[in-house]
Length: 259
Image (cartoon, rainbow, N blue to C red; front, side, top):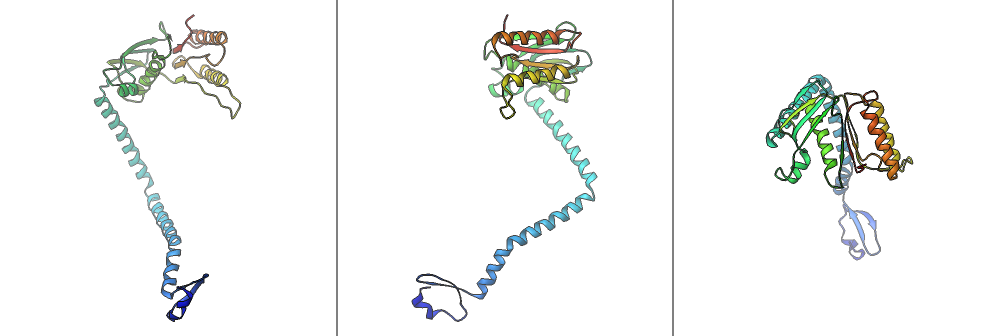
């Protein structure tokens, strides 16, 4: 209210603030309401905390049954998802066994197939065995499909071992104890590791931890260094993995090197 009109202010108005050409007033009722509004947030937090504590106490009294129910629902959810995917995308039931063979006919990459469409995706076969077809070397130009193919095999084996149907016309898969992959290029400048350093550290870890029951997937090993050094490294790793006395596990090895 302007200062010239200050005489018209009711007696129950309380001056709140004086400005250059005006006065601000407040009433007792407004002041009480303001207090309630300002304290409401604190009251909300206190009430929320109280309700949360009460809920936790109630849950803790029956936590065993709740966790068992959650586990059952999670299992049903996973199995229902497997069934829906198998029906929708024409997956088949793989035959699992304890031998060393991986025999997949007309295998498909589940993600790539969905992106490009079933009619455009070209299925691929594979046969790996610790006895006679233990190491497969894939060569070809960029964008030929090498990485997609080796990823596809790894995904199908993994899907089979978690209880899912797989994208193929038939699949006989010997159980593997681990699936190791060395795919992609990246460095880690925060710890001073170059692309080549990371590539070698990860490859060494695979070689040290793999067993004859493992599946190894390697993509362009040795590309982080010079051509001839990369050739020597790739050749040495392939020979070591293939040697039954050293490791002798099933391996997919994609490379640009053709000699």
